[in-house]
Length: 508
Image 1 (cartoon, rainbow, N blue to C red):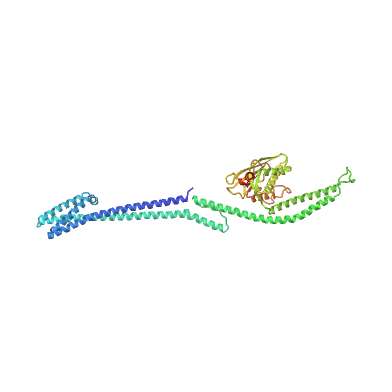
Image 2: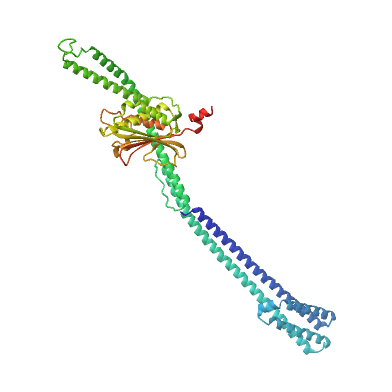
C-alpha cells in the first residue's frame, strides 16, 4: 500500500535536491563571472599601463624632459611584466599568439623610444614610436572590449539559466500543489462531507477513493467509530426497551401473584372437599371409583398444576425485573458445573451422557447464584433438545479453556460486552440434539421467544441468561454444530490471579 508520507517526503527531498542543485549551479556561474571580472581587471591593468606609457611618451616628445623618459620606461617595464604574467589569458581571449605579438610590438616600441632618446630630432623615429605605441594601445583596448563582451555573455547566460531554473521550480511547485490537492484535499473534503452527514444523524460509512495508507487507516478508524456508535445506539435502544419491559413485567407479575395464589388456594380447598373416590359402599375395598369424582379431581389437579406453572413464570418475570445486588467473586468453574449437574440429576433423560473437560484451576469472576441459573437454563434446554430425539440417547459436552479476547478463536454470532485484550474463560455447552433452525438463531435471546412446543417453555430462560452474562461483562453466542446439535459458548472474565481461592489460602 502506498504511503502519502513517503510521497510527501520524496517530493520534499526532490525539491530540496533541486534547490541545492540550483544553488550549486548559481555559485558555479557566479564564480565563473567573478573569474571573468578578475580577468577583465587584468586586461584593464595592462591597458592602463599602456595608456600611462603613451602619456609619458607624448610628454617626452613634446618637452624632452628626462623625468618623462624615466616614467615612460617604468610603465613600459610594468606593461612587459603584465604581458609575461597574463600571456595565457590574452591568448585565450583573442587567440593564440596575441601575447607574443603584443610583446614583440612592445619590445620594438621600447627600442624605438630608446633610439629617439639618443636622436630627439629624428622624425622618423618619432613616427615609429607613435605608430608602435598606438598599436599597443589599440590591441589593449581591443582586448578590454573582448573581455567586457565575455563578461556580458556570462552574465546573460547566468540570467537565462536562472530564469530556466526558476521556471522549473515553479512548474514543480504547481505539480506538487496539484498532487496535494488530489491526494490530500479531496479525501479530506469527502471526509468532512461524511462527518457532516454523521452530525445530521446519517451513519454512512466512509469509502475514500484514495490508495494512500494514511487515508485508508483513517477511513477504517472512522468506519470503526461508526460501527461502534451504531452498536451502542442499538444497545441503548435495546436497553431502553428492556427497561420499559422490565417495568411492565414487574407490574404485571405483582398483579398476577394474588389471583394465582387465590386460584391455587381454591383448588386445594376444592380438592380436599371432594368426596372419597369410592362408589358402591363407603370404604369397601372392591368399590368402583365414582367417574364424576375422578373427573373433577383430575380437573382440579390440572388447575393446580397450571397455576404452579404460571407462578414459576411470574417468579421468572420478577427475577428479571428485580434489581438484586450483584456480588462478583472468584468462582471455580468445574465445581460450579459439578454442583449444577448434581442439582439436575433427577431431570437427566435416560441414555444421555455428559462429558466434562474443565480444568480444576479455571476460575471466573462472577455472581455464583446467577451463573448457576444460567447453567441450569442451558443444561435443561440441552437435555430437552436431546430428549426430542426419543430413546436413542445423546451427549452433552461441557468444556472450558482460558484465552485472551482478540487472540483466541472467535465464535459465530458472539454478542455481548467482551473487550479485546481482556483475559477470559470460554465455556462451551454442545449437545447432540436436532439443533436450532437457522432462521430462529438470531432471535433465541429475545424475551418470550422459544423453540419449544406450546406449553413447554416461557421464552425467558435464554433471555435472562443473556442479561446475566452481559451483567458480568461477558458475552454469549449460539451456533449449530456441523455434526449436529447446538453449541452455546459463554465468555466470562477470568478472575485475577491474586484473587483466586488457592492464592488467598497461600497469601492470607
